[in-house]
Length: 253
Length: 336
Image 1 (tube, rainbow over the protein chains, first blue to last red):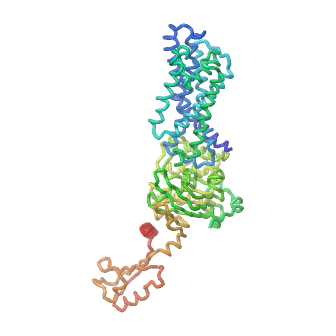
Image 2 (image 1 turned 90 degrees about the horizontal axis):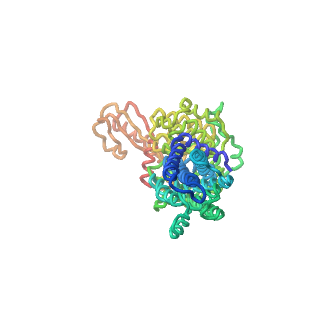
Image 3 (image 1 turned 135 degrees about the vertical axis):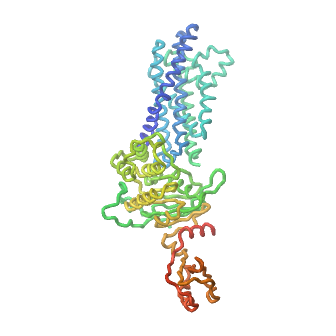
């Protein structure tokens, strides 16, 4: 294990976060605060409780997941795409470092940033609504699992993208809609039966449901299904990355 | 052909920088530090960049790889360094297979690519230190300081790379490659777009590196660079190694010489008795030029001088010049 190389990549990526602090941390916090103002205070005040909690409180886990998902993908995809774009990837590829270590450095840094961001948003939410987390360990576990899984997914997008347009395409056209339709702002039970069945095909539903359960013990699907689905997506991402490195796809060909 | 002497390699001292030792001694050139066997590369588009390349680089030498654009120079380097996958064939670096034992193989190599790929917003110090970490070496600020000082980058250590000139960026790339004390340094077109003074400075750096035991492989478009620097020269064209030869042998084996005679008086035409020498009258008849092949058993110089005396043509001075590597290179590439 070339732990020094992993450390070098990890610290390099983390340093990029501090250099772009406004974009990395401040911007998501501001946009989440706006969600609270709009949905929590303005619209939420006209909505009665959802499954026993106030609407403002209900949307907190969904909002955190929304940011963690999008930021994990954005961080990891940009982290690996940028060296490809500038050409500095030559150094990573020529270094005595395994594929696993490369992924560990980049995905580790991207996931760390997302987790920090998720916790900052949680703290921000605490300023707007009263919060009580029923299962803090599960909450943290879900946060880490989601951050890692979607950082892996972002890494794949970063390898696949051969232009800035493609880099933005999947997050904008696929992930954001799935997140909005995944129950960030409502319970799946509120949907008519047909749409509820369609919603169950959305993997984000399972993430948000599990995460919300760790807060309020309210869930659209059972906790074990949520964990299983997230783990399955994690394994799929790992397999795709294994294939990328085995074939040299978009890296060595 | 592919013989490796692992034991001597393990005893090699690490360069530890590239200042020459107190009493520089010529490096012992004895074994292949890089061995390329039957290497081919076909890109996805079907383009064959390398065709069955066989090449051995000897420890401690400066090897120049010459070839026109698109000949396969960068592809060959990329495969050896792990940036591109080979389609067929085997490469050993320090006796280690670049695919099955990539950690050991790659840790011996420093690469300075052709393009100026840099992290624009990083400082010089940070980017060079990053490279050392990436190659698994423990922190060593003294070594980084020495590399930066030797490359005249010390006063720029805190500058962002984006603020540096092209020549400085090139030196930053060299510093990154040297940060982990490699035994082999690849310089892909190191002096492309670099002014004459800086180019000569880089040649000095390369020479001192060689004296410290580093094997250097450089590709270049500048024939004079290969002529100036290299111990051996390889010529690659259309993905095939056309020739590998000691520079001196190459020059003498393939070189032509030119004898220039500065005549006492101007000559308007040459007598019939000299026609078979195929002489050229230049400078309005003031100089006479005779091209001859050094490979031939007889150069014809003695009989030419004798025939000139008989014809009554006298000269004040004479000089001979060897044809340049460039002439040899152009000839070879054309015929291959």
